[in-house]
Image 1 (cartoon, helix red, strand yellow):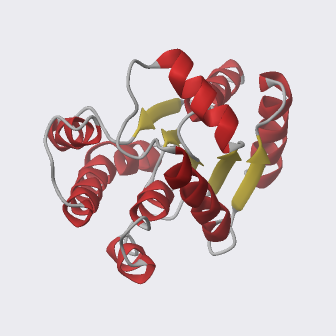
Image 2 (cartoon, rainbow, N blue to C red):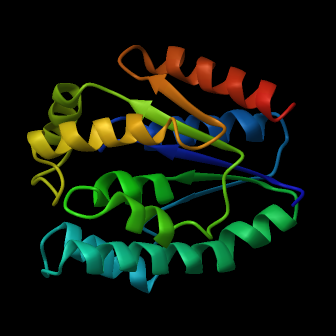
Length: 198
């Protein structure tokens, strides 16, 4: 496809949204056409997922991961692939690495990888890495309640899952986020411009 697909992954509170928005702004300033999107989406399935994460309804982890994959399939079909075919740069705040990293709390890694194996591989995957203590402080500062996966022991396991998965996918870069926002942004821009030859 003519466009490029960039994904931001990491534990909650790692600053994914901030860095995705900064990259969008940088690329737009350089006159690229950019689509910034996220998962779960704002569509019907994404709304069901968010309700489960907030414990507004209870389901099994396996059911939740199937919903994430259904949301992703729809997201690709309706938004990501059409934008890429039109030559746009698509930036997604979360994608399938998050499903696998979070889903590995209680589910089989091989099953999760198989579930996501047919989805489009990004041109660049950024895993934004931050200490769990920093993540929790940010979550406390910005939200009234913790979501489903936001307990310390779980977050530590999920962080390790992200680092493990970073070695299993090509074009995956682990970015140390425990420094200034601007320093992190500069590193990301450098990788994007070198990798995508922008």
